[in-house]
Amino acid sequence: MKKRKVVVAITGASGALYARLLLNELANYQPLPEEVALLFSDNARDIWLAETGTPFIEKEPFKIFGIRDFYAPFASGSSDFDTMIICPCSMGTLGRIASGTSDDLITRCADVMLKERRKLILVTRETPLNLIHIENMKRVTLAGGIICPANPSFYSNPQTMDDLLGTVVSRILNLAGFNNYKFSWGKS
Image (cartoon, rainbow, N blue to C red):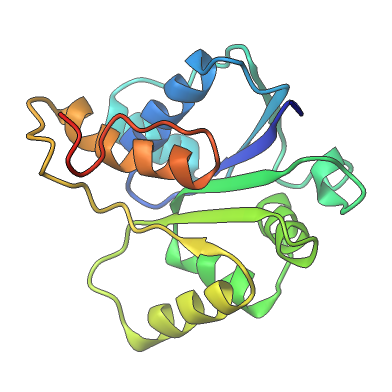
């Protein structure tokens, strides 16, 4: 079985708690992905600190790339990264992806995923949505991306905040092909 190479991008949208749980799940997934590249938008670390109460601490198995590092391997379609997850995905990032504007490494990598027909998952957090947001979601979906709103489910009867967040993170990992069925309808 081919080892997975995944890019996780964290933007400045509210939702750092989802990103933190997603990274914890990926760090503990077996078999461990061959590589997990990590990107932060310009203000994502500030939002991380505001929402989690602690600064992001670099740890294995993640390799952090600068937002302007266009020499990162996944900035090219010739790389073998197979999945990109943007969690949370701001509406600004969604709009730039939908319009094909590759002005930083997050949007360039998303463009690569779409053009190479690889998996691109955008975990959007904005509410309510305006027509521009909806049209941008439509464009990304038609181009092959997956829009996964960070809407938790309640049928698993979550008891803690992490349980609630976990319903979304489990869905993200399933969409990414990691078969993480912790929270499924009808599963006890």
